Image (cartoon, rainbow, N blue to C red; front, top):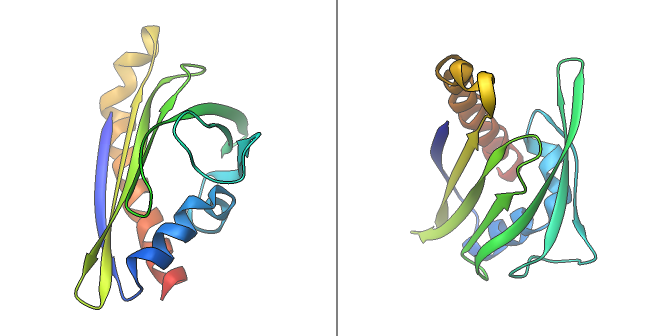
Length: 141
């Protein structure tokens, strides 16, 4: 399942990237996220590990990830560790006029028999990402 969405905001690319680089801010704009943190680090760096706590209905889980690509001030990508699923995501912040554009991409690959549910879950997955970016836009003004 892959989803991507874009959003333009009237803030500088530097300030938006700084906001996104503080993963604890995810609880403020991502609906299912109840906690997110770097492990043994305070900022994104290539190879840094992190954990994100997700609440999906009555089910809670912690996803572990590692930063796989980084261009400071512009782009960060991470890779999930495969428990409970494989995939990853990225944020790219690009200056546009007086503001910037944020591109968010997510990919999740389910395992085993659960893969038959990907078409159904994929629809809500993409809708959720778009809704999260709308919340981010409201938060950033």
